[in-house]
Amino acid sequence: MFMQVLSQLLGGFGETVKVFILTLVFSIPLGLVVCFGSMSRFSPLRCLTRTFVWIIRGSPLMLQLIIVFYGPGLLFGLPAMSRFNATILAFSINYACYFSEIYRGGIESIPQGQYEAGQVLGMTKGQIFFKVVLLQVIKRITAPMSNEIITLVKDTSLARIIGIYEIIWAGESFIKKGLIWPLFFTGVFYLVFSGALTILFGYLEKKLDYFRS
View 1: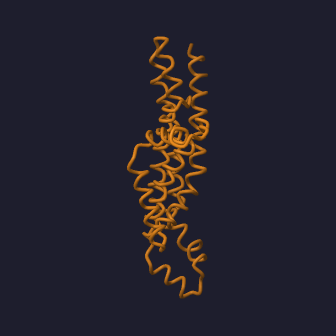
View 2: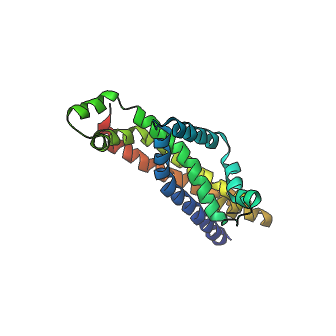
View 3: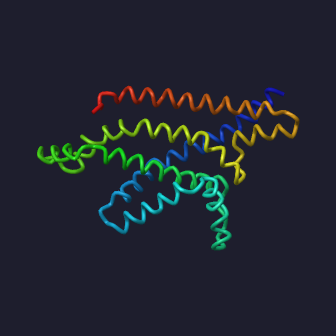
């Protein structure tokens, strides 16, 4: 029985990992695009972007999942996308908005004097950003980014709301057979996954210590 439980949990964990990785692949660069929109000097774009971020951050991810999956068909009569694609789209948009605010905070925390010093040295705006600002921003956002990414590990369990067979669903399926320990055992997977990420981000923070200001 233990091997049967382990096999099913590993299958569900595989889906969890796929949702986690693909969300990061899309949301990390998308968050930068959203960040630049929210920092734009063009007022309509800045207001529109910040309003969108406010809506996404202020509403539950579970609601966003339901809207992304069912909304196009019910509202516009469009063919429904696959459950997995809807999950990745909803998660990516949600986390891109959170990441964008972390990026914005990191960029705006750099003293203006560093930009001015770069200009005095004859550097272009691109050179100032990539050679002077970027690594300092990475150092400053590592801790809040790691917190959001670890939160994502746990949020992947919400994918079950639209029928994604992730690890919680796999563990819960054994309740019908009179077994509840497989559901508790799923916590071990989350703890190990989160622990590995914590160690990784701790290592990165130490590597970036020379950027202390």
